[in-house]
Length: 436
Image (cartoon, rainbow, N blue to C red; front, side):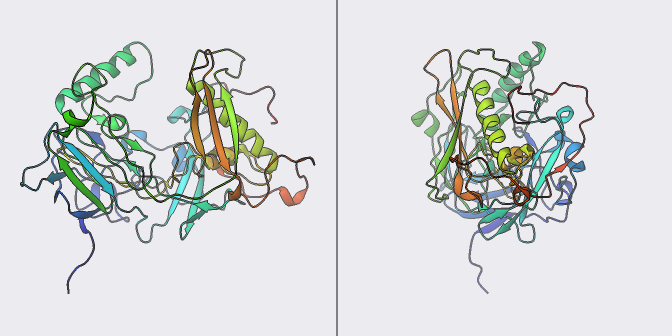
């Protein structure tokens, strides 16, 4: 019987650990990792992946797996995959590799995801000084929709996060990464460099990166690249020099180009929360977009907590990940699976209960289809950041009205997100004007 559809080049057994798979997985961006498969330019092929935790984070109703998760073995990549041109020659340094992701989806029998915040002593997360505890919310799929029993009252179309896709770096670029990140560490600043070979998330930004895009995108990089489930590749010989301008001291300092896809949720009404580069203590920062984004998200979390959600629930909604993310590597190619279910936008707002508690709100923003933006960086000294939340994902009207915020037993929803205690000694940041 003839076989139709994309050829499976990297299979995954979801019941096995990453190191037990038929083809070896890895979590480093390194030129010496040999390719595990080979595809031709123009061929549609399928790559299966494990989730970023490699099965270490489960759908059990506990946050213990989050609290004690080992971050050094995360972000497993499928590949590398060697891409051959129409001339039979593999993609070479300096070529431009165009990768079209035709489809993304969870593996059969594994249709679930999670959003989580890591313990402050074990990696933490954005706003970890406000939310130091490990938390988790499990999400399930109903067709294209996602819902969570831990963040009730919210349902939305969940586009899958495309995850990490990139090309393997040449040794020269790897040495540049290590040297500049080592300098950060020596100066006492945080760095995730781990010596010989970048952990998969770190070099990802340069090697095509951590993609918060829709289904179709173009990737460029130095060597060959890999693709995701259902992908199509094209090699443009010498295209890097032809189309890209280095943004640094060497020809290696180039950034990828992306083309967004055609599939997206449709929302027409949004609530938008704003922040400027003034921190919780009232200190002014000069055009600092990170500082500006914190009050935008904190405003959204505190606002939704008035409608019955815990603040952790709201935050979790913005971090939601699902089970399927491939990745693209260079002359050595590397796709990978993620077990996180993110809608389409980079910054998401956590969803929470009607009696939103802080943590419910925090996790909601992690995965819902909200939009985080740098809205202004020209009006010094303030950078302006915003986060927009679609109102239709809630089963109640969350817009301000002349009446007061609803109260009463009907607005209180249980359970809350799964949560562990914080056992560290670092102080927790609190907004003196916050509702809770």
